[in-house]
Image (cartoon, rainbow, N blue to C red; front, side, top):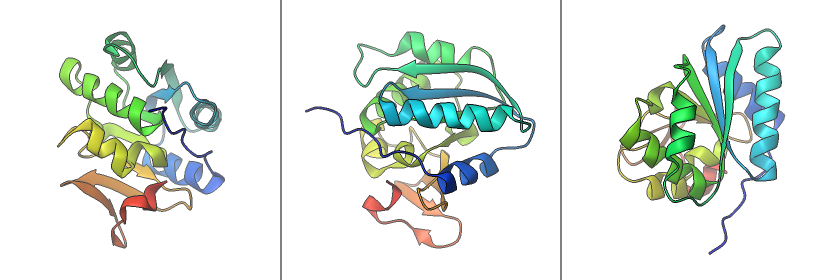
Length: 164
C-alpha cells in the first residue's frame, strides 16, 4: 500500500507548534521526504531561527526503511532541548519505534505537526511509543498523545480523524 502523504501545514499549525516549545531551546527537526513534510520542516526551521532558538540539525527519513537506525542516531546525537517532527504516519511510526528502541529520544520533549499525532501513526507506532508527544492541528489547536489517544488541553479527546 503506498503511503498517504500528509496535508500541507497551515500558518495556524506552525504558530501553535512554535508556541509549544520553550523559547531559546535548541531543536533538531526530523521529517519525511514527501513535499508537505519537507516544506513544514523548512517553515519551522526558518521561523525558529528567526529569533526564537537554534536548529542543531535537520534529519529526513524515508517512508519505508529496513531499520531507520542511521536516521535515529543522527536525530538524537546533537542532544537538543527538544525535537520537532513532520512526516507521514507510516514513516513517522517506523522512525519513532526505532527511536524508542535504540536511542534516548523522549516523546515528551517532542512536538509534531498534525500528521505526527494521527490515529494511524499512534496505532502503527505501538502502545506507549508516542506517549507524551505534543503537537498542533491544522486549525491551531494543540494535542498530546497518551493513554491510547490524543487529547486537547481544552476540549477533551479528539475524534480519530480530527488531527489531520
